[in-house]
Length: 244
Image (cartoon, rainbow, N blue to C red):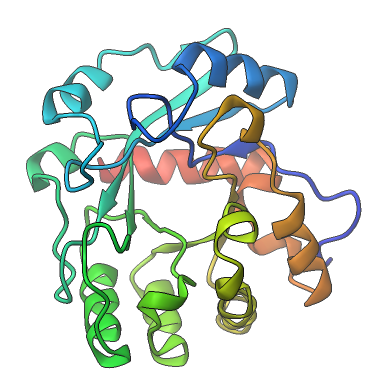
């Protein structure tokens, strides 16, 4: 079955709080938004320390003291780690990443000067092999173009999930064609994806309609989307627990 009009996410694995100073809502506000959206899980994934307005390392240490569930919403206590160079190095200590519930790895031009397609390809291949990384974040970003055909199968080989990021359709319009190509290749090579909001306020939590519209357009198989099915979410959480 392909993504259709009834397809909806049940969990949002990538959201920011005002601990990332360019975001606007508290954790409690995000939890309330998740409840209104009938989500079962909320990712607490503020930016890693390489971002100028990110929280300090102590924030991520303390994050692990949050309860696992609040008001029926499972909290995934994680980080959006920044890729800091063209070798796949991240801005967070490996020992801390191994303790987090969930680790996203993403490029941001505020942290890394874009290089060549070959540079970014080399970096993503290294990240595919990094056991601390769970999700490849918004990799369609046009400034960090890579060899999709070469890399996507390797993500699958090493158990990485690829993000379809709804925020791209708001703030990275030039990247939409890349996102479509990445999604097509994920379908071809049976690489699972997460459709996330990348919310920077409570008003964006769970808002992924434009991303789902794109997946409908290309007839993406719904079975490859982890967070549209309760059983797939449970299986994925079990896998994360075994890895961290």
